[in-house]
Amino acid sequence: MAIDESRAVEAPVDEAVALSAAACMFRSLGDPTRLAIVRHLALGDHKVVELTEHLGLAQSTVSAHLACLRDCGVASSRPQGRASLWSLTAAPEVLGVLAAAERLLAVTGDAVTLCPTYGKAANR
Image (cartoon, rainbow, N blue to C red; front, side, top):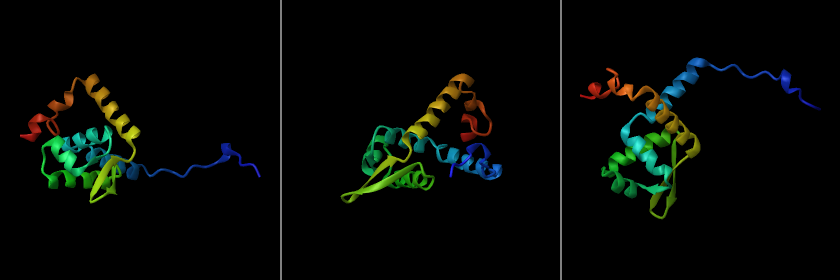
């Protein structure tokens, strides 16, 4: 029996749920330390000890940020000996989002740094 795809009905999307999920994803990438971790993971898999050395941060700090990225589905780990090896779960998609952000920053002239809510002045 052939299926007529032109008559297929897609399930309605709950816009509030979709927007909430997108906002959560952006928050997961909205921290400079997590972005630095993502950049390192984009180069290849890393152990926590390697990330702490690269970033100059405490192991507990790196682990907390990795847990956030894991909970949001951005990163995952697998055992390697007594350590865990971390990687991006969807590297091409994550890197695509970051590339789009860089393009947007280039177009806006980094105007977001002047934003009273999220810009440099807000962090003082």
